Length: 157
Image (tube, rainbow, N blue to C red; front, top):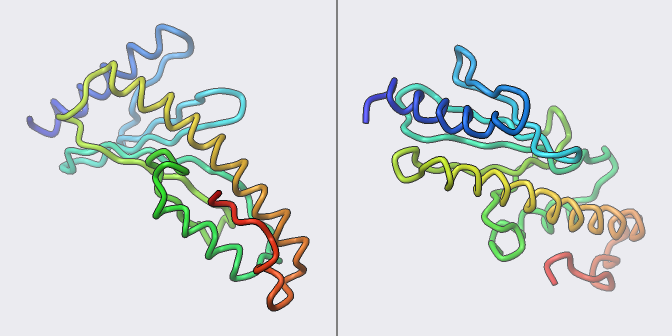
Protein backbone atom coordinates (compact mmCIF):
# COMPACT_ATOMS: atom_id res chain seq x y z
CA UNK A 1 0.00 0.00 0.00
CA UNK A 2 1.32 3.47 -0.85
CA UNK A 3 2.15 6.06 1.80
CA UNK A 4 -0.81 8.30 0.97
CA UNK A 5 -3.19 5.34 1.11
CA UNK A 6 -1.87 4.35 4.54
CA UNK A 7 -2.39 7.86 5.85
CA UNK A 8 -5.91 7.88 4.41
CA UNK A 9 -6.52 4.50 6.05
CA UNK A 10 -5.56 5.86 9.47
CA UNK A 11 -7.61 9.01 8.88
CA UNK A 12 -10.55 6.71 8.10
CA UNK A 13 -10.05 4.86 11.38
CA UNK A 14 -9.93 8.19 13.20
CA UNK A 15 -13.09 9.36 11.44
CA UNK A 16 -14.92 6.24 12.65
CA UNK A 17 -13.74 6.91 16.20
CA UNK A 18 -14.82 10.55 15.83
CA UNK A 19 -18.45 9.51 15.52
CA UNK A 20 -18.37 9.24 19.31
CA UNK A 21 -17.12 12.79 19.88
CA UNK A 22 -14.75 15.48 18.66
CA UNK A 23 -13.36 14.98 15.13
CA UNK A 24 -9.98 13.28 15.01
CA UNK A 25 -7.64 13.75 12.06
CA UNK A 26 -3.92 13.52 11.41
CA UNK A 27 -2.24 16.89 11.09
CA UNK A 28 0.16 17.74 8.25
CA UNK A 29 3.02 16.01 10.08
CA UNK A 30 0.99 12.82 10.61
CA UNK A 31 0.16 13.35 14.28
CA UNK A 32 -3.02 13.37 16.32
CA UNK A 33 -3.83 13.55 20.02
CA UNK A 34 -6.46 11.08 21.15
CA UNK A 35 -8.02 11.74 24.54
CA UNK A 36 -8.94 8.19 25.43
CA UNK A 37 -10.54 9.06 28.76
CA UNK A 38 -10.12 11.50 31.63
CA UNK A 39 -6.94 9.72 32.73
CA UNK A 40 -5.16 8.91 29.46
CA UNK A 41 -4.19 10.85 26.36
CA UNK A 42 -2.50 9.08 23.46
CA UNK A 43 -0.22 10.68 20.89
CA UNK A 44 -0.63 8.99 17.50
CA UNK A 45 2.18 9.37 14.96
CA UNK A 46 2.10 8.10 11.39
CA UNK A 47 5.49 8.96 9.89
CA UNK A 48 5.60 9.19 6.10
CA UNK A 49 7.11 6.14 4.39
CA UNK A 50 7.09 4.02 7.57
CA UNK A 51 3.96 1.94 6.97
CA UNK A 52 3.47 1.90 10.75
CA UNK A 53 1.57 3.83 13.37
CA UNK A 54 3.06 4.70 16.74
CA UNK A 55 1.16 5.43 19.94
CA UNK A 56 2.70 7.14 22.97
CA UNK A 57 1.24 7.88 26.39
CA UNK A 58 2.66 9.48 29.49
CA UNK A 59 2.36 6.92 32.25
CA UNK A 60 3.60 8.96 35.18
CA UNK A 61 5.83 11.91 36.04
CA UNK A 62 8.95 10.87 37.94
CA UNK A 63 10.47 13.02 40.69
CA UNK A 64 14.18 13.84 40.47
CA UNK A 65 14.85 11.91 43.67
CA UNK A 66 14.33 8.39 42.29
CA UNK A 67 17.03 5.78 42.82
CA UNK A 68 18.56 3.51 40.17
CA UNK A 69 16.58 0.59 41.61
CA UNK A 70 13.35 2.33 40.68
CA UNK A 71 14.43 2.60 37.03
CA UNK A 72 15.59 -1.02 37.04
CA UNK A 73 12.14 -2.12 38.21
CA UNK A 74 10.39 -0.04 35.55
CA UNK A 75 12.59 -1.37 32.76
CA UNK A 76 12.21 -4.95 34.03
CA UNK A 77 8.50 -4.67 33.25
CA UNK A 78 9.39 -4.61 29.54
CA UNK A 79 10.34 -8.28 29.86
CA UNK A 80 6.87 -9.10 31.17
CA UNK A 81 4.20 -8.37 28.55
CA UNK A 82 1.56 -9.81 30.85
CA UNK A 83 2.27 -6.83 33.12
CA UNK A 84 2.59 -4.15 30.42
CA UNK A 85 -0.08 -5.68 28.16
CA UNK A 86 2.22 -5.12 25.18
CA UNK A 87 3.40 -1.61 26.01
CA UNK A 88 7.07 -0.86 25.83
CA UNK A 89 8.15 1.40 28.68
CA UNK A 90 10.76 4.09 28.41
CA UNK A 91 11.89 7.13 30.33
CA UNK A 92 11.85 10.61 28.81
CA UNK A 93 14.71 12.23 30.70
CA UNK A 94 13.85 15.76 29.58
CA UNK A 95 10.21 15.61 30.64
CA UNK A 96 10.99 13.17 33.51
CA UNK A 97 8.10 10.92 32.53
CA UNK A 98 7.70 7.17 32.15
CA UNK A 99 6.30 6.72 28.63
CA UNK A 100 4.33 3.78 27.27
CA UNK A 101 4.74 3.06 23.55
CA UNK A 102 3.11 0.76 21.04
CA UNK A 103 3.51 0.41 17.27
CA UNK A 104 2.09 -1.80 14.56
CA UNK A 105 1.86 -2.13 10.80
CA UNK A 106 -1.00 -0.20 9.27
CA UNK A 107 -1.61 -2.89 6.65
CA UNK A 108 -2.17 -5.57 9.32
CA UNK A 109 -5.01 -3.71 11.01
CA UNK A 110 -8.47 -2.38 10.29
CA UNK A 111 -10.75 0.12 12.06
CA UNK A 112 -11.96 -2.45 14.60
CA UNK A 113 -8.40 -3.53 15.40
CA UNK A 114 -7.33 0.09 15.79
CA UNK A 115 -10.20 0.91 18.14
CA UNK A 116 -9.34 -2.19 20.19
CA UNK A 117 -5.66 -1.18 20.29
CA UNK A 118 -6.64 2.28 21.58
CA UNK A 119 -8.83 0.70 24.28
CA UNK A 120 -6.23 -1.87 25.25
CA UNK A 121 -3.48 0.73 25.39
CA UNK A 122 -5.62 2.94 27.59
CA UNK A 123 -6.21 0.03 29.96
CA UNK A 124 -2.51 -0.85 29.90
CA UNK A 125 -1.45 2.72 30.73
CA UNK A 126 -3.78 2.78 33.74
CA UNK A 127 -2.54 -0.64 34.89
CA UNK A 128 1.14 0.19 34.46
CA UNK A 129 0.58 3.59 36.08
CA UNK A 130 -0.62 1.79 39.21
CA UNK A 131 2.48 -0.41 39.20
CA UNK A 132 4.75 2.59 38.74
CA UNK A 133 3.01 4.42 41.59
CA UNK A 134 3.70 1.41 43.82
CA UNK A 135 7.35 1.47 42.76
CA UNK A 136 7.54 5.20 43.52
CA UNK A 137 6.08 4.67 46.99
CA UNK A 138 8.41 1.75 47.63
CA UNK A 139 11.41 3.70 46.38
CA UNK A 140 10.50 6.69 48.54
CA UNK A 141 10.11 4.36 51.52
CA UNK A 142 13.56 2.89 51.01
CA UNK A 143 15.11 6.35 51.01
CA UNK A 144 17.56 5.07 48.44
CA UNK A 145 19.43 3.15 51.17
CA UNK A 146 21.66 0.31 49.94
CA UNK A 147 19.98 -3.01 50.52
CA UNK A 148 16.58 -1.46 51.17
CA UNK A 149 15.25 -2.70 47.84
CA UNK A 150 15.74 -6.32 48.91
CA UNK A 151 13.02 -6.01 51.57
CA UNK A 152 10.38 -4.29 49.48
CA UNK A 153 7.89 -6.11 47.31
CA UNK A 154 8.54 -6.31 43.59
CA UNK A 155 6.19 -4.41 41.28
CA UNK A 156 6.37 -7.39 38.95
CA UNK A 157 4.25 -9.64 41.14
